[in-house]
Image (cartoon, helix red, strand yellow):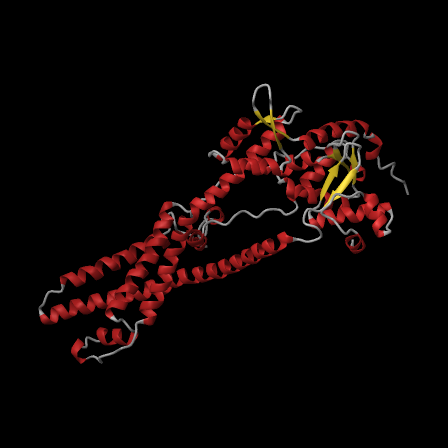
Amino acid sequence: MDVLQKAIKTPKNAFTIADASTASGLSFEQTERGLYALVAEYRGELIPTEKGDLLFRFPTGFSKPWETQEALDLFFKKLKKGALGIAKFVVRAWITIVMVGYVAIFAAILIALSFAKSSDRDDRGGNSLGGFLMFDVLFRVILDSLFWTFHPFSPYYASRYAPPRQRNSETPFYEKVNRFFFGPEEAPVDPLENKKRVLEEIRAQQGRIGLLDVLRVTGMTREQADPFIAALMLEYNGDVKVSEFGGITYSFPELRKTTQTSFTMRSEPGWLKKKILGPLTGNPVGSNMLIAGLNGFNFIMSTVAIQNGWTIEKLSWILRGVPPHMMPPDFGAPVVLGWIPFWFSAVLFALPLIRMATRPREQAKVNRENGRKGLLLTVLNKLTGHGVQEPVLERAWENNAGVKPSQHELTREVIKLGGELELNEDSGETLYRFRSLELEVRALEKERAKAKHSEQDVGTQIAF
């Protein structure tokens, strides 16, 4: 590869294997394999000619301008994942503190203050009913929260003593907390899924496939599919052929060797399913209300603590019944019972609000991806030598995305698939032709017809 990179001076211009071989001094076989490796690494293009030759071109040369953006995306993705992991750990610990620590602390404070107020009222014969009622209401809120969290008949109850079936099916409460603040996690994706589907397609199609087959089973963009096929050719001893009319096919005869008598295609590719914007939390309404209530309670109580200057020292004086005029003038800032729970609770409430504000942008992204899939599916199903009408592609996009595409969006995706705008002079209709894919279909038919059944034969087992 290094020899080829140095030898090819103008990689942005199309060239033949013979050009590269002459410039580098490598054999045809070495040059061909090296060029496929370069195509896979630098996102090169394979261009057929009308005489059946194959040209190579590297639109960005031997550089990777996309790496900077992808590296930044990967960096921020990892940063986001790490930050979310830390944040989720903090949230889990914080909610535990809320339920076990701060709720208990604030409950104890309210109980003590209620008794102190009641005792003071009895001693003085006065009436502090308003303050007592406020503490009584807050205390009842705490008890209700604890009841619906831990009572065995509550729908939110989760305990190690619950029946095994309930323990397995019930989402842990800490996971509901994570969903409330950070949203539900996406299901993991098998990184080898696309490769396995394409390999199965190769075996099912007599070892001969085209770009169209890769698009059909994976839903990739064409920009992704070209280097993907080039990498497969290196890994599985593939070969590329150009028909006399310019259609490109990829052959993998060695992948056909098998002891099986038939091949069963897998289920419908997952990319055909419409992408749906995930729920904001994925929790039942009751769980969201409970979590919001617990966090809200701490927010309110921290506000009360800040307004009243509830430091631990000051509370100890209050609970001992010391009159205000006999207390020290300054107890400092209420950090433990005031500012810490206040800011944590405020930040936690801000997280779902921020995600809610960004949902329109996320929905637009989902719509674009669904529109692209609808357009691709229509091109795959309606690919003929007569082109596809522009209104047909617009409807396909709209039906799958739920929104009409802009002219820019539609044209951009059509061009990415290799489409060319064509005007029917007789009818005045606007058509899109996909000539390279149309030629590929014709070439595949001929190559598959010539495929020999003996390619599957592994011979008779040797008896020892």
